[in-house]
Structure formats: structure tokens, C-alpha cells
Image (cartoon, rainbow, N blue to C red):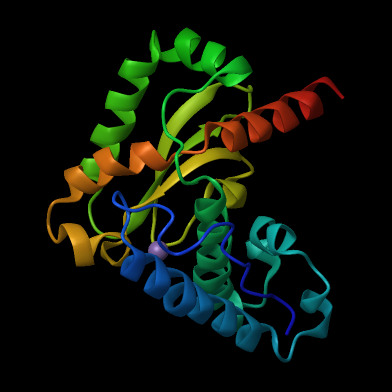
Length: 208
Ligand code: MN3
């Protein structure tokens, strides 16, 4: 297998009560695994693409042969987004960002509360299945964006810092149609140390 399902960095029940054990189990073991399997299947007859990293594949979608492009986009995107999503959550986290990211968010959105409100609103209003991200734009400024399906910022050459999965499979077992409740609970799981790490990595590349 070329691409592999990453191990969840905490137990299935670690995010209880905000995100329930059963959802985590199905989401990681079934949904994410399926994206990985289908990505590998799509690459089966393309040895020259098998040597590319997932990010390289997603950055070069335009050059991928047409017959597998949609599959790489959907399943490669699904693999990337979920891998990112697991890492940006953690048990007993939440709270507010510290460090450079906190300063950048205050500069852009006035304060953390205003940022959180704006992000939550975009997540609540997203139509259909997709993701809402905090990214750094090409000028290194934080910005909230949404992507449809399994599209992501990497495909657009942007740097992701934070993401929430808004496909129904991410919350339906516990929250059914109450997406805003899921979004509010999800903030309790955010691993701001990880987001800060991505922010610092991006900033150090800017300087270099
Ligand atoms: Mn999902």
C-alpha cells in the first residue's frame, strides 16, 4: 500500500463528550480508511504517481491523467483532510490560542471571540458537505475559507492551520441536524499547540 491510514493520536473516546466514541470509530476506521483504499486503487496503474507524496499529488491535480483526476481529488483530498483533522483535535484541549497565531488572529479579527464567531458562522452556513478552514493566504495573513467536498487549501497553494469537518458523518450520530451544537462542542477539542506549530512553520518558510 502506498498511502496508509494514520493511527489516531488518541483513543476513540478521548474527545467525549464533545465528539462521541462511536462517531470517531466509524469516521476514522471506515470513512477515512475508504478514502485511503480508493486513493491507492486509483494509483494502481500509475507507478510514476506512486512516488509522489500526498501533498505533491494534491498540488499537481491539473497534471494528473484525466481518468483518475476526480478520484485523486476526492479520495486524496479526503485522506489529507481527515489526517489533518485528527491532529488538530486533542482531549482536554480547547481554550484559546497563544503565541504568534493569537497575535495574528487579534490583528485580523480584533479578538479571539470575534474570530470564533466568524468561523462558527461560516461552518454553520456551509451548504452541503465540506470543510471550513483557518488558513494563511499568500501574503501570510490568516483567513477563514470553506471548501466543498474534499477540496482543500493545499490544492490552492495555501497553508492550512485549522479545520472542521462538516460532512454529516462527522456529527450525525450524536447531533443529528443540530450542526451548530456540534460546532460549539468541537471548539473544546481544538489543539491550539498544533495550529501554532503550523503557523510557525509557515512563518519560518516566509523568512527563508
Ligand atoms: Mn469526514
